[in-house]
Length: 561
Image (cartoon, rainbow, N blue to C red; front, side, top):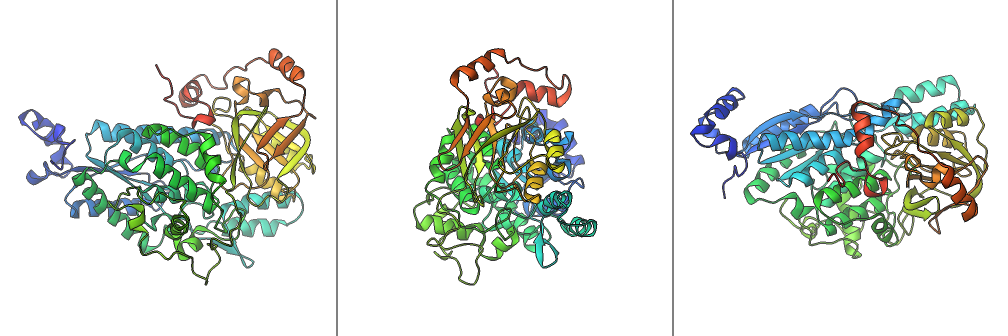
């Protein structure tokens, strides 16, 4: 089989003389036009520490592709920083950027007839954006994670960016002073790499390793360590080999491999955002997946890792303890992984894990043994009820009280909610409702890390519930329910809640309920009127017009015709 199966459309034949002339200007020589053209999707940016080290990785990928016999073509794609835009209007662009990234990678690779692509990403939306594009195009591909940040240190404890968010709540509650707040700010983010706990970036990188689309051990490497660059070059070699063998993403991204990824997400205590992203990835790959599938897997997979935000350790600690292969081997030994799934290496999952010990080392306590898990069941519960007929996603690890019934405190935006928390207006027993922050209503489904961190910082994490049609950061924990669908903007029940209404959040029973009569609920529904769009031009307006429900992954290409 020709190695330049796709790119020959722009390199072969006399009629392609102009095409070759332009390619020569980029470095092609006489002997290069029969080699596979391999795209390098480079999300390097100095916008955020998550991506500022990626350019060196892209250069190593370029070296690896050349040495393996391919012709690299590097192109850029965007990133936005969730952590920096958090709590502002700019955060509305975060989930939107996932679609922009997917569309840009698809556009570059397809327009230029590339034979394969190595996608290198750091901040949260780089990863699902790249994987959506990879699944859509179905050309040989590999994903390389830019790497995790190393922890900051202060007063004998590890810090992450979430430490800074929580410090704001503690400061406003007079639990720390100005000096302590400033020290945490200075030390929380010591260098390059994505946020250090098992937040969204490290969750998605880990899941992609489990999926088979990234190399073993690569998902938990520190961005600044030499092994990260070495692994990137190695990934390039495997990609060129996959092009020769025509190992395609949809041979790897299957129903069974997605189940593997979800099992690992549960075992590591990963982010709620993984639910939204895998629904979208599955759709792009033509794999049937629903919210209920996450609940099915949750009930059989224990949480094995003691990781932040609700635990003690960060991703670099997980790496030292054996990384994702060690977690996967434990799950495989207990029939919770499909060992016959193909990976980008050309090996099956079982073959990749053959030499990994069946039990974690006794010299560490980041990864728990099977008979001593952190929790006996997974932490991402799918809640339903009259407040979320399509479902909502709750992260229940670290929650002392899995059930709360209390009065609704209703806010029409994240900013109004945060102001009330910082002013001390939220009390133990309250159920905070933040609405019109969904995919259409926001638009963009902002993450609520600032309010949830403020609640934790104020010491209310075990006594206050919070529900929203928006999202939560991977750094969030507590009795919180996000992705509530249908959202307020389309008339979901969350739009009908009134101040003081009784609401029940019951993680054990997987219930999210507004405690009013059916008759009263229908009366309110009949009187509800939709709001005018917040944006009428630009990317947010287009996104709001196209985006689906969060229960379907908040995709923008659903039922276009």
